[in-house]
Length: 403
Image (tube, rainbow, N blue to C red; front, side):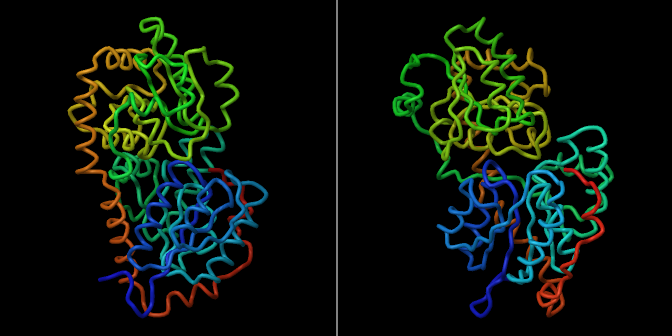
């Protein structure tokens, strides 16, 4: 069953609070694929960060949604705004990405329109204490208002299930565009990056791409890096990204660590690297390892949700380390930096793995299959019901639910 016909285009509403990083890239990739299939796509998101302009450039619609990263006093207003957006756009499917949009969209829609929630890593893993208990309570309750919960890895689904989230699951692994993320000569690429102008072209170069925040574990990486440079004094580390921990990380970093800031395009950094590292504390399935492997670069990552499903099975033993363990991380980095033929072999294996398992076209088609299932199960007139969805403040908005 096609999602759209020449008579009436299926209307998809994506809702997201993150407007940069992995979540925004997933939304943009889906928007691109869905517009190419003739769907009418609207993205509700905060202005800024590049996502809104990128969606408009593709031909999609953007409606501003002012939202903070975490729940707070503004939550009721954010939910009401999503309700107005739903009534205005009358979507056939609402697709909410990450914790905050999943919270606000499900409270606003409450099952009146087929709703897909995609956690992109669980909210209750990001916090602790009372806040984690509230986040878990919400995810358990909110599952009733999700027609499908789409996890990006079996491990992410299992984490939710162990936590007591009873949901109509679907696992769709993340994907990347192998035409955009493709290999190139590291030496040639390095010559074109001003930040590397003073770096010895022969110096081993490790690159970490990700938001500078506790989740991504750059603090653990800096602890490990001191051990790496004792063994390999010429090695250099580049942190690509920005975030709330930037100032603290700069204060901890030695001269062998370079800060690139937020990069609109990470491809040159992957290509410049001898080795890419992602020391996350938690994930659903991170995009950075997939992007690096598509560029033919070996990866060292922490063994969090989605990591084993990202990497080729026969490289996991040498490329995965325990989260938060600086010593094993340093050992893994040094082992690969000291073995160029192994790095080259791992890079080729990674590229093949992405081509067969993590092509973004497979991801987009699997999401389209979910939409088809939901639309096939809907009686005529379901979109009209969304037009009359209540605009008042749900009781749940008045609770202190954190994600």
